[in-house]
Length: 172
Image (cartoon, rainbow, N blue to C red):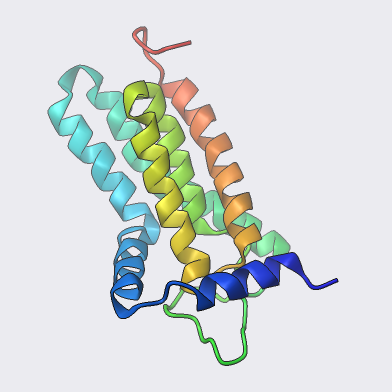
């Protein structure tokens, strides 16, 4: 039986690759470098929501911190990035280590923690995290399993941080 992770990666690298779709995926992925887009969301929310400013600032710091946790896992696992013959990756990375996806970890950590502060925004936050995570195998930077594990790791981190940041007006 063929490796399903590799088969799904190949599928994602060969379907829906118009120049416009590739440009969009690259732009989304670039916004996720080092958790920048999520830090920006947290900082923006802090600016416009003074009563919960401290909680939002905590979420702004979470994405870069989640990448640090992710890197520790990468060093322990040491899985190399995928290489598909004839399909080079459509982006660069600071390391050759693939597992888990830092974009997925940071995005899902942020979405989970921010959802504790703004529960009605949870669908939008998790949709953004999902789109960010899906850019990684689409661009050939990660196996799909890297993204799944990164999302699970990030969700766990986000729930822990979200609970720590929860205030009296937070849902239980």
